[in-house]
Image 1: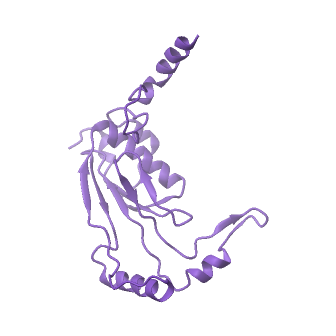
Image 2: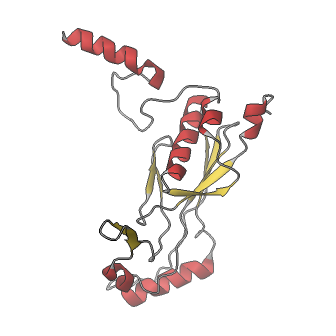
Image 3: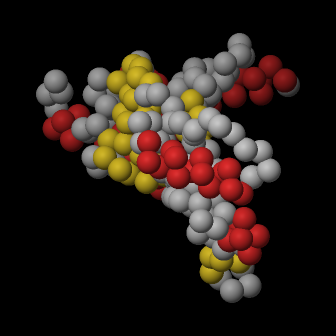
Length: 197
């Protein structure tokens, strides 16, 4: 249990992947994590000439009748580092049958298999990864690529006060000479530049 007021404020919170163009989200701080985004046929594209969002005609026709498919949800407990990834389609028989029915009516490839959601996944992150993930989730929500669906999104100041350091490249899975933490970037870059002289 946290003893400081700042840490106590950071209760678990969750975001649903809900991009503006029905895309998936790749989460850098969790290896191999790809969240299926919300699919909504009414998501428009920005048209500069009219300064508005409009639904493309082919999208409106092609996706007509498709129910809104909720995106996968990422939950983080910044205090413990525990996270979970859940899929609202998992065990939602009615919605899965509606989606399958729509696909069979509107796709040249029919299937006897019903769409199913992904089983929940849980894990735990170290202090550096959880701090970096909290900031990643903050940026996703700020960019309107995700919606807060549980708890309250912490402020950037609260995230910065979490223990640990921000990781420089949390998505990297290969050996490189870059420093592990962002705070060491300038020193490393200066050293590389001096070696090049």
